[in-house]
Length: 147
Image (tube, rainbow, N blue to C red; front, top):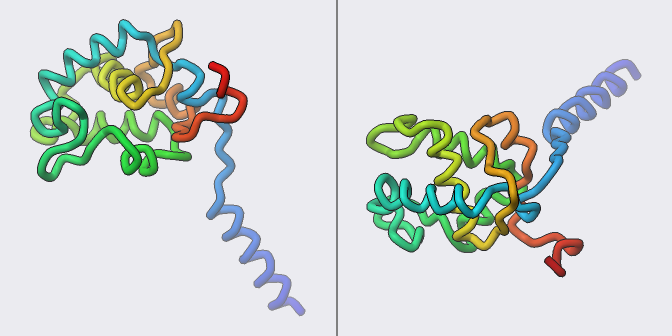
């Protein structure tokens, strides 16, 4: 009996650990960047990212696309902070973390805009912790269909 209870508690603990509860306060459909920020991000992207990821963000060679179904499904259900941190710590490939946090946020705003997510009236934050509270949700929620 003791082994059965211990095994049951172990399975419960593993299940709880495998499915972390993630609370998001917003999602990418809520307008989490400004148009001005995305415009600034487009300029930075053209200078620092476009050569590898392509003018239309479709990817070239080994650099993956930053637009379309495959990109969206890769980040669906993660946070905007996850994508921001990946960009910031790995790009540009030849000199990671060489942009300011504001510039990375602007480039991310441009990527969100290019993927059809709406702009809002507040700029995308440059802090990972804040961005971690925004869900990257590929499909528009039913309550946002009229927007």
